[in-house]
Length: 167
Length: 177
Ligand SMILES: [Zn+2]
Image (cartoon, rainbow over all chains, first blue to last red; front, side, top):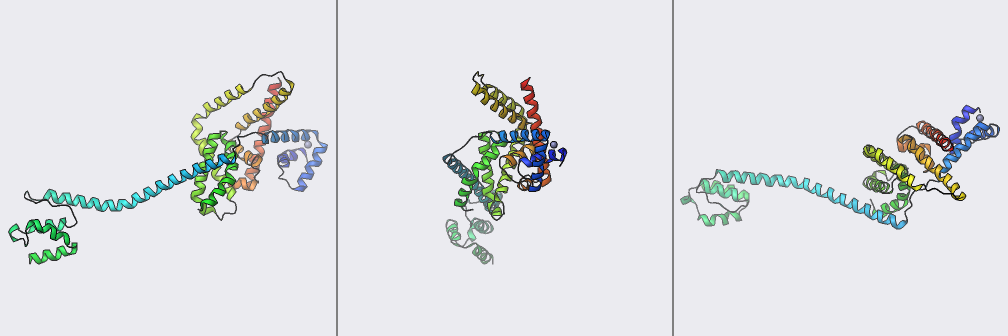
């Protein structure tokens, strides 16, 4: 092996990544060539002092605390993610509720002046329909009791009653 | 992921990954933060990598990516922090007449020179040098961690060592003058 070739391989000779054949060839060359031998020494010295460089040491107890801190951060992130997921899921429900309130306020705005305001409930809409369509003297039961009766009914019953009344 | 399994993984690899991160960012608090961020990532995607042949390589990759993110974020303040570090180093050098201490000083001087020289490497050169010299990883692992070819990893290591030797020689020449 010539000097140029040795120079290319020296780094890998020092870091121990060469094949045995190449290692032997370089060893042979270093014995005969002072220039390459000097280069070899410089490389070894540099790598050795690099390896000696100190970094802070932390003991097991420290790493235990560090682990606990990491876990609590993972849990926090997990809670946040769960919260966002719940909110996303809830936004569907919120959407329905919003629709309900908007339609309700629309009904309230369009009601006549003598409109009797009633407690909010699923049967609200049905009550409004009944009350606004039928003149009060034609109501089958007194206004005060109407709400109670309607409350007991299932939503699908409202239509049945309505058609029955209008017949 | 089973928390017992994660704890074992943590206790086994955190100190090693810390040393790797520290050699890159040269700051205890930042290195510890990087290890924490790395383990959060590891926790979140561990099930995907459980069967991966080399979990260690995967973890190194995460740490290196976080180190690179760190440098990207720090780019603006790097100039100031570099000056701060050299001020700190100068304060550490106390004059001494004692011969024993002079030898120790020479040794320390060499280490300081090397530290300065290491800072003059490109980020890629420093990464390959650290992974090869300190973590003693194979070129194959380094190439996987850095997403480069094995040949590129080897060539980069060669360049790093040659550059360090030249810088060190130059600094020693100036000291003798
Ligand atoms: Zn030679």
